[in-house]
Length: 349
Image 1 (cartoon, rainbow, N blue to C red):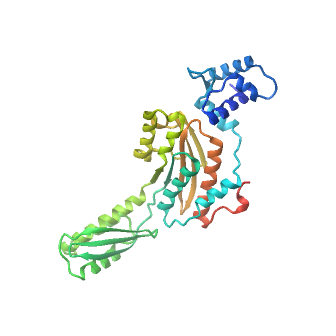
Image 2: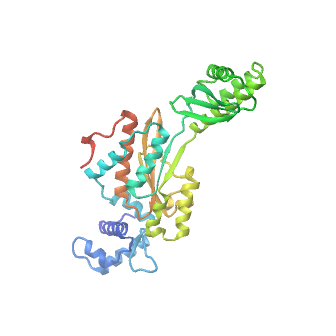
Image 3: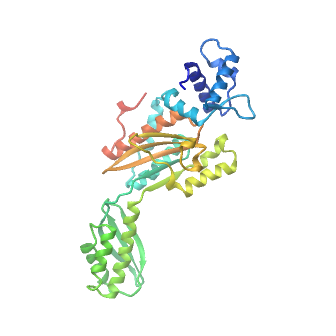
């Protein structure tokens, strides 16, 4: 059933008011905000129909109405006024992204922290895994008679290292020679190929050398497998506690625990839309059924995508969150693509 313009006006007033105050709106308060003179009785009739149609509900303790997920969905799709970022907002976002962040995983993690601080909601950030990563170079460095450091440079220029025990004593030339062997046979290939190459060398190297090779190759395979997995970072879960909806400690704890312990199951965008808003039951996971999630994706480059998401009550300020998150994602895409923030003429006054 298509809603009349008056019903849509009333629904918008209820949603705007509830977002601002977390309090149900009654017919008298709605009448004061309606254009023209409309009686409270007429508004009560319209409210009753909006409840019957599933757009509003009436809490037991109040005569006022609050939006349902269906009401929020219509509001987001049709009634919400577009939020235009102020110069101060764009300057604040640009300033937060102005620092140097050398590696992709560091930038993704920091992006989530910035979003949470700037939005005032819990947030999360993800980056797609890279299955084309390989090892560019190995270096084995002696520490003492019982240990050495394995240094692994990946093809995306990240450098990882780990202290490893020596199961058998080796002379001063062994580690450089094994480094040379690793760089000759185990660079530029994936984890499966590393395993195959290692097996091919079982008859060509001594048992002592093979133990060292196996140690370092296991570490390299672990690094490559981690690089192939999606990285997920969450932050600001405690921000939920400031919202009236999460005064129930058990309710807040369930959602906060989900964001920390099950972060891999947080929503990701579907389709090609750069922005997605999931309201209440639209979220697949039960822990998010009474929350809303706003997600924006950005381009990391080299056919990789990242995303930033905000989690909050269904009474979220969708217009402001969507505008800020969209600009934030656009800024991240420009940073990765051109190494710069959006030009001044692109910021919205």
